[in-house]
Length: 177
Ligand SMILES: [Ca+2]
Ligand SMILES: [Ca+2]
Figure 1: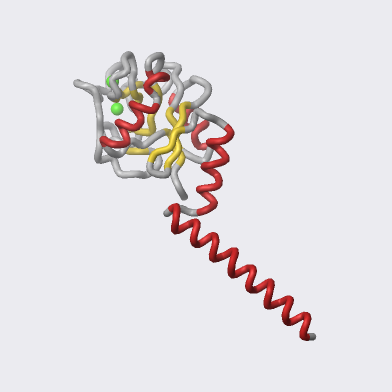
Figure 2: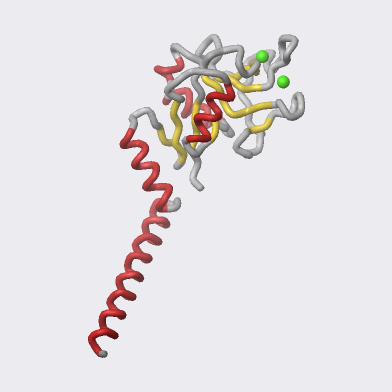
């Protein structure tokens, strides 16, 4: 009987230690441990991922329409990027400089639901913007309701486009849960 009680106590003590460790790690890294582990494993799998403020970013490996890119990002557990500050924009320009020399990229903003009312598809509020001069202009007969970064030239600025008029990669953002 005594042995059994001692065993139970040990298991209880061990569980407490494990819980304590996880809590410590969570507090130390200021993010959920499961997210921290997922991030590390993705970054080990591919050097294409870049990290900023606990979020991960990379370009889709293939090119396609805005919807193709968004679908791929969602399959990865994220969305096309929501650029919500000047600092985040600078991080993106610097981190993907090499890739952006040869391509633009779809980003996660759209005014498809209501013309002129731009929204981020991941639900973040649309306060910061970095449109190119005279954009968004909703040009062409079909209108333009989807965001693109560095279209035509790598200046970090945004344009609105029809979703399938260009074949481009998308910039994925994975956020902590
Ligand atoms: Ca539009
Ligand atoms: Ca436009």
